[in-house]
Length: 103
Image (tube, rainbow, N blue to C red):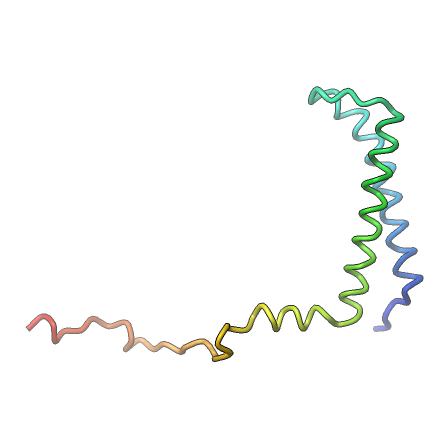
């Protein structure tokens, strides 16, 4: 499996976001009034532009993050205990009642 270049990652992100852009314009004009939001087409255009640019950048950054293999470090960091010790192992004997206290 080959990795994507930065340019191809960006192109894929743009195509993905542009399809979302068109859907967002249509959905807001149809669904918005049902919930009491009456947004003009011009306002809808600018709001959608802002969210689209942010979404393209977010998608690109996450893709580069995973392609660089940095997610392994993140998993290792969050999976590590604070004291760097392995989690304790328990056996069935650790959970049996202490019958000595009943005597």
